[in-house]
Every structure is written in C-alpha cells, then in structure tokens.
Length: 283
Image 1 (cartoon, helix red, strand yellow):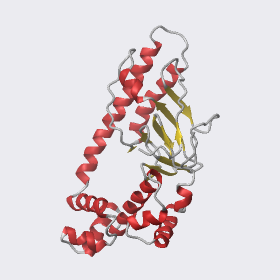
Image 2 (image 1 turned 120 degrees about the vertical axis):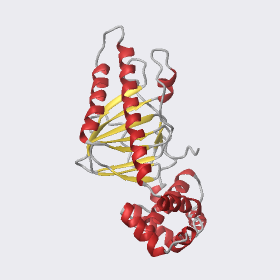
Image 3 (image 1 turned 90 degrees about the horizontal axis):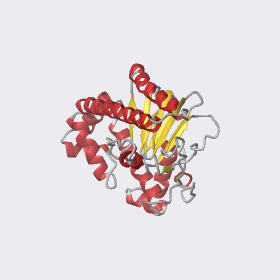
C-alpha cells in the first residue's frame, strides 16, 4: 500500500492505557480535521447527528445524512466535506488493541472495509446511548473495574453496529437485481477499455436504452452516471496510490489528458493535480 497519501498516526490514549479517543466536532483541539484526502493508522466511527455535505470514503462519495454512522478502518483513504449545519462526534480506536488486550478481549467483527450505515432516528439513538456511556466511563477516574466496564461498553457498541450492518446488507442485497449486479461488475472490470453505455448493454444482451431506463428506475442514476462514477473511482485510486503522471492515468482509462481533466474537474470540483497535491505530506 502506498504511504505517500497524508497519514495521521497519533491517537491519544484518552482512557488510561486504552487507545480510544472520543471527541465532539468543533471542540478544540479538533486535531482530526484535515481538509484533503488522507488516511489514519487507527480506525474511526463517525456519528452524524445532523447531516449535510459529503464524505468521500475509499474513493466513493456518500451524501451525509442525519442519524448515520460512517466506519473508516485504519489506512482507508477518506475526505470529509461537511456543511456548516452538520454535526456529530467521533470515536477513534486501535482495533488491534481491542482484539488482543488482556483486560477484556473483544472479538472484532468487521472486515477492514469502510461502510456507511444510514439508520432511523430510533436506531441511531439506541447506539448513541451506548456511546454516551463510553464517554461517561472516560470521565471516571476511580474504580477497580473501570477499564473492564469501559471495554465491555466498547464491545456492546461494536457488536450493536455490526448487527445493524448485517441487517442492512441483507436488505440491500435483496434490492439489487441481476442486471445491476452484472452491470457494476462489468464496468469495474472493463472501465479501462470502454465508457460507452452500448458496450455494457451489449454484454448484457439488452439495448442501451433499456439498460439506462432500468437503472434510472431502480437506482435513480442512468447507466452513463454509473459509468462516470466508477471511472472516477478508478482514476482517484491511481492518483492517490501511484506516482503515475496524469497523462499516463488518462491513457490507462482510454482517455486523452485534456478530456479526462475536464471531466474530473466538473464532477469532483478539483483538478487532478490539486486532488493529489498534498499526498507527500505526513501528519
């Protein structure tokens, strides 16, 4: 994995020797606020009590909704653009410690893959109440079992979120039909060869019009919008994780440099050069 992307390494051990930190956004010192694509060497749960803006997580853009939880595993590239009205808090932690500590070992249920969990207000409040208890434990200075109670609370938080993730995955899987699954797999495998709707429609043995109408009906995005989105994800990965020139990246995606640069600026809001500008800085 490339280590050129900005990387924040330090995690304050805010609860005795347990490497977990809880912080409310906008409260100084907000040392996790980095306005560029970056990665951490620890994991994070970001809890959005108020929505607004977007979160580029592992090169995929997600609208920030209220009552949502975003999970950022260690070394995952992310870029947060919050609106002023958005609000929430973060719990950052060392997952390796949780899985191996001698006080109360936690069987860690997550793969090292980012996710966004959009919940109902009731579901979110239930999980938030656990995080509130964790915060109260951080503030306790006395008690023989304080570290044990803290880690049990962390385990409850993690397993409750994991349960919601599993339920969400089952729901999403049932909604995603065969055409959409095959289309996305084909685009991801062949984005460097072709970005036309007809190319992928032909592979599915349907017309380009039918494919686009089907996707728009089921996902609110046309086939072309899906193709551009997946193209930009592939380009971002090469910008961040390689030292290839922009000209070479364009060539790798069957584009000329000028056309890809214009598309990237229009869709992402940054030039490709600016997007990768600070990747050699270390935090």
